[in-house]
Length: 274
Image (cartoon, rainbow, N blue to C red; front, side, top):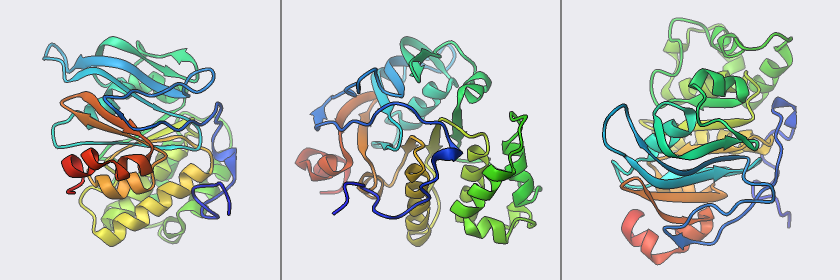
C-alpha cells in the first residue's frame, strides 16, 4: 500500500508552485505547538500574540505551521481565534509578540500585499470573487503580479477544476456556492503561490458540495502546495488533515496529526460531539 495519504487522487504536476522544505508529523499535545522540521517549518506563525488595532489581544502565544504537500487545519469553537490566527499570518492584524516566517524569512513586518509577492495565496471566507467578471477574467485577475506567460498555469487550474473550464465564459456571480469557491481557489493559484491559505472554504455549502471541495483541496495539496485551512466542519476537515490545531480562546489547546486528534478522547468529547 502506498505511503501517500492522498492515494492516487490529484494532479501530481508540482510546477504550479515552487515548494521547498520537508514534512513532519506531530503527536497530540495538550496546548502543543508545532515541532519544526529540519531547517524549520516552511510557513510558521510562531508564538503569536496580538489583536486588531488598539484592541485587546485575541491570540495568546499561538503557533501554527505547515510544510510542502501538507494540509494543516485550524479548528475550534466559535470565537476561538481561528480566522484571527490566519489573518495574523497574512498580515491583517498586529502581531505584538512572536514572528511569522515563510521559507526561512521573517515576514512579520510585511504588508499583506508584500506577502502575496513573497508567495502567499489567501482566500477569504466571503467576498472572494469578482461576481460581475467571467470565470476566466477572475483567473486572469489572479495573475496580476505576474509578468510571464500564465496560460500554462490557467490550464493547470482548469485541469484541477474542470467545471471552471466548462463555465469559463459565464459570470462568476451566476455560479453555485461551491463553484464560486473553486474560482476563488483557482484565482489564488494563478499567482503560483508557495503556500495557500483558505478561511472556511466550505462555509454555507451543502454536505455533498463540502465533500467535493475537500476532494479538490486534496488535489491541490497533491501538487505540493502547503495548505493552511480554517474550518468550522472540524471532523471532516481533520479527516483530510496531515496536522491539526485546536484553538480555544486564542491559544493552542491541542496539536497533532488529523488522525491523532480524531482519536483523542478529550478532543472528541470537547470539540467533535463525542
